[in-house]
Image (cartoon, rainbow, N blue to C red; front, side, top):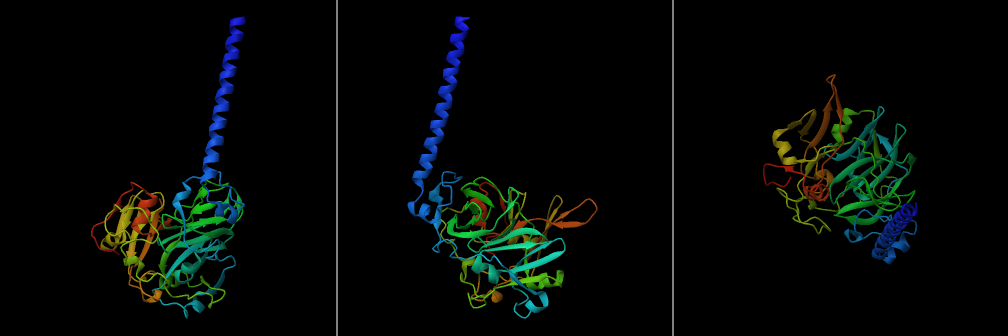
Length: 347
């Protein structure tokens, strides 16, 4: 009996020691993370929990503007397609969403100056996001753990991509991935909403009764102008310190499909016009201007329209979430994933 009690006491002491060691390790880890936080971040972001981080703070850099210096649109204003047609050239690029029979277009002439639009379509709260430095346009559901929030811009970049924040917890989110990097929601991922990047004429043809986003104050920014002239034919991405080891140019456009750990260059797709991957079909048609080429977006060179659909058992097709980012961004956020390409032309 005494031997058994001594053994039990020893196990109890060992367990307590293990718990204490784990607790100390967690505490030290938290202290180490906290020590890495630049002091001015904690002053600017008093509501952000910097003890929780998924990435090293050194990877996050200032883009220049302060918090909300690039203002998100929280009360979007729309015109009918017919009214908006007087403002837009046919080739102008728009991000479009269709939910529950409601269709809306978000022109890149507006998105390039605001980065985020908090909207609600058919009772679905969405965040329409666009980062011109990565040419990454993604739409997310604004519900986190069942609660609706809105998003703003931190004024910071990671791997040249916009870092957003949610206004409920002020956690920081990667625009390209929809993943929380820092804060109470660190590690969570937003649900994607299928969208298209297409020309205004394509949207008008598909949705003659759709609505088109317009700026509340047309004089607030130089809407229609491109502040990144010739960016998509440059050799080096802005504020990107990584190396690009993929095919072609780091700023060539690639098609990234949700659920597929690979990308297809726009040049490859343009030559093929259609690529099938199982029940997924990626198609290309001409008629869309680059938003990151000439001084006026409407005059940008033709990079074409991309459509990604899934074939259902009944023969019908549904849209699949996709993006058309630059190759360097895809490689940065999908390391090891192949980029299928056939030429060295930057497109």
